[in-house]
Amino acid sequence: MARKSFFSLLNLIGYYGCFYTINQYADKLGVIVLTMFSSFRHVFYNSNILYYIRILIALSGTTLLPWILGEQLKITIPLTLGIVAAALTDLDDRVIGKLRNIAITLLSFLISSVTVGLLFPYPWLFFIGLALSTFSFTLLGVLGLPYGTIAFGALLVAIYTMLGTIFTIGYQQPILLLMGAIWYYLLTLISHIFLPIQPLHNKLAECYQQLSIYLANKANLFKPEIEENYQQSIFDLAMANSKLVNTMNQMKVTLLSRLKKNKNQSRTNNSLHYYFIVQDIHERASSTHIKYQNLN
Image (cartoon, rainbow, N blue to C red):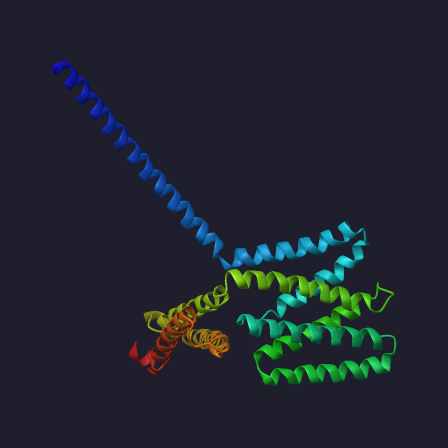
C-alpha cells in the first residue's frame, strides 16, 4: 500500500512538473509572438514602407504589362509617367470624395493630353492653346488646395505629352497615360479601403514633428550664447513657424473634408482632438514677445 502511494506521488509530481515546464515555454512563446506581432504592426503601419510597396507594385505592373501583351517596351514610358502624375496629385479624402477627385483628375489629364497631342503639329495654335490652358489651370488653384494640385498634375501631363513624340498614332499616348494613372489610383483605393485613417494619422504625426522642430528653435533663444547668432536663430524660428503653420493648414483642410458629411466618426474626431492640442501648444509658444537679448 505504501509502495503504491509512493508511485502515485511520483506520478503526481511528474505531472505537475511537466505542466509547469509547458507553462514556462508557453509564456516564452507568447512573449515571442507578441514581440513579432508588435514589430509586424510597426512595419505594417509605417507609411513610408507602405508607400514604397505601392510604388513597387505600380512600377512592376507597368513593366510586366508590355511583356505579357507582347508589346514594344516603349509603352512603358507613358504608363510610368501616368503613375508619376497620379502620385503627385493623390489627395486624401473620404471614399466618396476620393472617387470624385480621381474622376476630376482623370478628366483633366485626358483634356490636357489630347489638346497637346492635337495642337502640337501646329506651332501657333499650340502656343495659344498652351497659354490658355496654363492660365485656366492656374486659376483652378484659387478654388482650393485640391484643385490647385489637380491643375499642377494636368500641366505635368501636358509636358509629358510633349515629350512623347515616339508615338505616331495620336490617341496612343493619352490612353497609356490614363492607364498608368488609373492603375496607381486603383492601388491607392485598395490601401484606402483597408487603412482609411492612416493618411490622416501621417499628417497628424507630421504636425507634431514640425511642432517639435519649432519648439527646439524656440528653446535656442534662451541659450546664454545667443548673442553671437541671434539673427540666425530668429530666422530659423520664423522658417520653422512657417512650415508648422503650412502643415497645420493642410491638416485642417483634410479634417474638414473628412468631417463634412459625417461628423460621427470616432477616429477622425480623435485626430481632431490631437490637432487642437497641436494648435493650443503652438499658440502658447508663439504668443510671447520677450526681448531675449535683454533677458540674457
